Image (cartoon, rainbow, N blue to C red; front, side):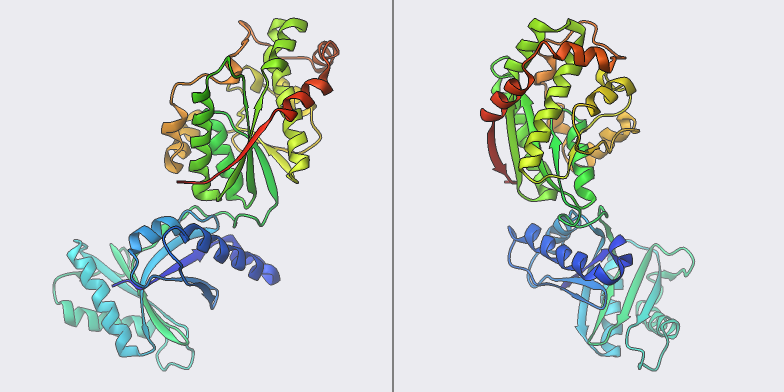
Length: 391
């Protein structure tokens, strides 16, 4: 029955004269996410974005379109030729489907896109509602204040549309409209969520993963690859940079205090990430840090971390509780992979009592014992890079 999708956007609607740039990017992103399913016609009319369904399974297409950042809702609809009687007939088809699904009350909400039409929007609702009641009799009741289902009827300039459902999207802004970010991706719960949240605000993503092979096994890297693939469902193809920091950790362990291992290691990761970001034209770093969650994420620890780089660092989870983060991880599909038990580089040489309130001057003094530039360049020179997308 459904032959078209209405893709509704949110913030884009208030963008003013450059709104068309966001709309065009949104159309491109919808086409990209649907390309594995087929070659879809995606286009805009009257401030709306449409996806022609043809013979495709509308539920499968809706599930993909709703993942596109910038989309706040997707409505499966029936489009017909511009004819008021045809509009009524389609409305009856949609209402009968809802009756079969068990709905008990409804209302009609109409929109007159063609201002030359003789009836106002309110008059259309009354007329169409009366027609529907005459056809369905007592199978469903009218409730204009709190209906279980709303039949939306539109008389547009060139066609008519009827829809009843709006499947919620994630909102945000279209990918690629707000620059590029490099995310420090571990195998845990937090960093994939942080990556997803920044991408939701329109930033293209690349990721860097730090590992300590052979002290950590290859399965931990495989886990991160799986997380990147899940993120790519929303973000498209993602470049993953894999950096081995075992030599850095060995140097810190031999030349710095044990309790400083975590914070100094973190500073090295940030420096390496900044080098990669600059080469890849990324405008910011992204981390999954949340205040007070672990020893390195105290305000003093974050201050020490920030001072190691000059590039902006985005921390979208900074004030979130773990339960909030887990909820998002479950929603976007990364949680089950994140909780798979594998070691990460932070467990290697982990101090018994890590510093929770490190002093920046003392950390910088300890780092004077290290050949920082050589350690960073050696790690980058041995970095592995691959591009991943959802299978």
